[in-house]
Length: 341
Image (cartoon, rainbow, N blue to C red; front, side, top):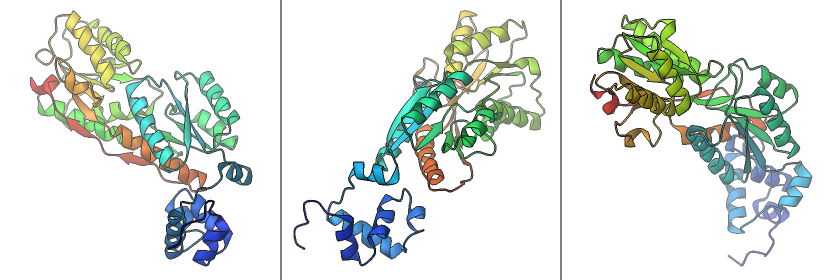
């Protein structure tokens, strides 16, 4: 084969493959295989892509932007990017975005509705093509407003009924924790539930309570403590539990590993041992969980994969699809913090 021209064009690829330049453009600009198949057969798509690759074809980004009004930017709104879980999810989003020719912007909302709206306004002012929300409130009020404004988006980490999302199956994760606690004989279980407006709090708590109910174990309302998904929140929630007086719970389920770490600190200060006095389970199975002085039993959530699939779902939304929510499968990783049970 002869040497490729220095600046291969759509017309050249169209001539070699025997299809129109518009078909070549649509195939090469399609974000997913499904979108490409709207315009061409699988065989045509293969020929176009192979010919473009042989000639090292690269679209002119300025021309593409002017022609399609695309910016190739994706926005992401998270409670706090310093949060390990959301940072890991963002890495997955960014990795997948780069693979599809996009760059990402992230904004922090601090789980504040006013900041959330300002973050969206900022991202839209930068002409992002779509937004990924990692800070959705379960009531969906703000998301309905964003949809009415014409913005395209998908959710990660937290789900909201009626909107496209990629999350962990958090209710199943809670059930895994509940089954484990029942199996090791725990009967007085407390929950550091997180924030009541987040599906992660709602679903993980519901799963735990339902699994324990099957085992004949009740979780009374005063044993469910809400608070931030961080170490300070976990400490404060555990101190509130202990302030209820004896008998203390014999197990604590924290809906976030960092809340579990905060709980460890509060228990240590009261001279209570994990797992001998109180067993402890976290959630997400962050890198720290296995490295703590008392390694933490935790529900593993595929955070990085969640981000990658969240970006892929957003691309489907941008292509006009209405994808069903996706829930990734959690697993329970048992370590020393419940081994004494």
